[in-house]
Figure 1: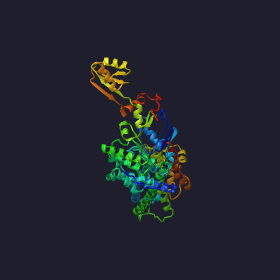
Figure 2: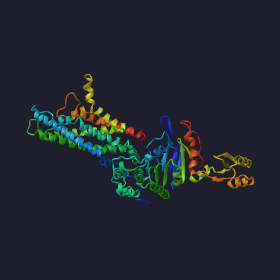
Figure 3: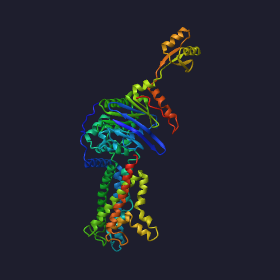
Figure 4: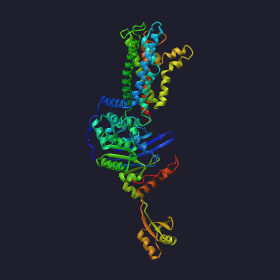
Length: 310
Length: 267
């Protein structure tokens, strides 16, 4: 379990995290979302004891990271796949990390094999593609067989096969009862991997909710109708309680009436209908709607948009 | 895919075990990059070669024998060898910053003073063994060149072993000074620029008006080290015990500042 408690982090005049609180629970893949610069990486660095918070605290299983002895057995992490000396071989890099936590050679080979890095383990990591570095980074996160795992943008640079593999790995790890905390700026990716979401913008919490509830709460379904007599249809639907807005060429976006009701009314009044499409907001759209404000507002005037659910 | 739990999670390991963990980890890091090898090769070639050139020119000069064989070996090291070993110390930390490796290191061992101590331990042992080996190798080569010549002396000469040990120890002190500077500055170029400024401070101080040049000069690292490697103590300099204290104090103070900063700063 990861507890982030009223975390504030300022870099000079810039407030990166603003009184941020949330909890990441075991047994789930928790997606950590936000636009670029929202404070995802800063939050993760504070959780891992790399940055000191200006106020508040972050605890992993009830302890500050800095108090954990041999932390790789408690928390596995991958913050930056490039955080390696380029001249060192993958094997020596993994070995040095393992040794610092009293983890033996056998486990090093095991995780390198698991992540598909073993064949190139003797090569200098500077020659690796980003995807290969990500695999090595994931291997290192798994070294200590930890109950808590933290990954910052782990699918960057991975090929489709690798992305599929990572998704399955995260789900497996969560199913084993581990806490899996994964950041991404891609909602679509998290929709496929995560079952819980924490969304931040400008260092503030925007949503802390399950994926299903998030879609439900942010759902904005309407019906698209196209008709050569759009104006007449719009007046008709309005008198029956619908909210109608123009949507493209001869198109109307209708809420308040469902598709069958619209079709029946149109037929009754002999208005031809060329298209009738019920539309549901995608996860991506719901996410964009939520974060829009925190992207658009200039620095220092971030709106106090509150938690959408949960 | 199953991830076997082969790691017993139980009692906290003792502090000594943890230190051993981090030391072995740092040792793996040092020996797995080329820069370590090249710096040591450069230091060895310039140190032994420089000393040999001093001996050869002494032999051919036909002048009266040099009174102080170990000090002359030491003076031949002042340029490259000492700087190279200092840079070895600098790189121990600064090489981890540009890539972000330092965050991997601190995520694995959040006890940052333990990391600093382990780096000091590994770099220190390498520098000490290397420094002592260089001191004895340079001396023996010089004496072989001067054999049968009036400048020749030998290891059995009173005071010589102690002076050689002091010369090797000075190399260790410079490596530690480099490590401390690297930890404070966190940037290779900056620390490599700052290192000679501290090491060659005596040369700068020479330009100060008398008596300030001598008064301050004797507290500089190299001047104090020179006193330790000299056969007879120089009257104008600090006593031998005080000189040893000065040689220890420079890296100690730098490492102390490094220790304070490394805990406070964001990685």
